[in-house]
Image 1 (tube, rainbow, N blue to C red):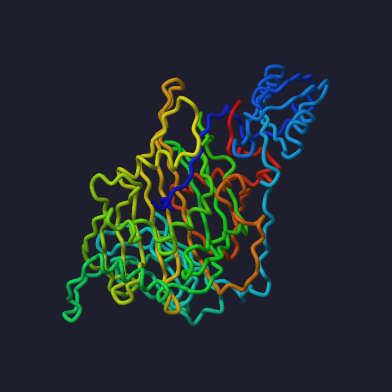
Image 2: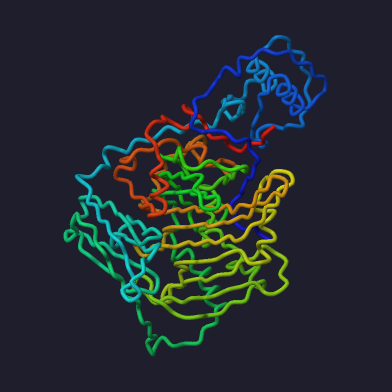
Length: 524
């Protein structure tokens, strides 16, 4: 069976309690010792150093094989000299109190790409406000706010709030506010003021026109989705400007917040074997949110894997004809999406399917048979497999269980084609250890928003610029300032997230010039 492409690889590691706000103390690397080792493992040699100096080591097991055996007879050498000999000067070392972090020399802050001055417009119009359900008076999260027939857009946050930055050259255009199951709201850009607006959306009462009342099997709809992919989605590569946010919580405390503007080279939907490529432009992260308690929780390859939530491109199991017998499908209802009639198909796994299956809903445009939105989660049987697939590494004697894994993906129509618009992944884990008296809920939220797109200009993405499956996003992103994003469109933080962002500081230069937060680590 094809892998569940929405899986995020999660790394759990037991760490010593350290303060990430302190200055590095490189004196630890200058301590001089003598080491004798004959056919001993790297792990054993590091233990010998720790026994002599009370200095401990953390490193990425994907980079270093602790079981590799070496010979060493080193007298009156500094710890740095010994490490350079052991690792052939392949790594750099960061000191946090009594801990030395051995890290990959390739994981350095990526140079920020300055905006092309030729593309800067004459002024930016800011359209902001809050979107509310007219009847229920409740905020509408993840509502699309975009320019009519253009590729610029954003979405509302969990509080229904949004901010859209519009180039001044689009004064004659129109903003469209769209939400599944609601009537569209349109406003001419020239009518937009500096004042934040409250927009009330009216739920649409949907009635099929008599001529459209036909009996259609959900399996037939799925077949038409696949047969019309090259008609409904771009056949040529595109360059997408995107905003990505990764948020981690341990119980009720935010422990990591990082976000970035990225470029995605979106591969043609003609070729399922061509992968999307993701390149970093600029980013920021919190420096002073609450530190991890006992367990260090990392997402590996977040920006790389979230593009795999484009289920039309990846043809995940619930769309793939080869695995369609694993699922039950039902045509539930019809709604309005972007002023277009839309089918809703619910799917769930059949009983006793011993594979990582999903359950959820597919929203299919009735006219074009394009998949325009999907909401799905790992089924109960799927979560059993997720225990192995989602968890890359965990400390010994720790019980780690995935509670749920929910995913969403949406597409926006422009120039007669449907383009990836946004994707979200929500994954929760229960982490327990009787020995260490730990019982925590870890919550991971990843958001991808496509804010603009253009035709591929054939400019090559350098290999060292690309996010890879093993990269840890929160270890690459660096600092913060209020005007950081400039004219880039982003997802406005929710009220709860804004409270956590108040802990951002302006004191740190970059992640690697101050006290680095450990990457994927094993504490010795």
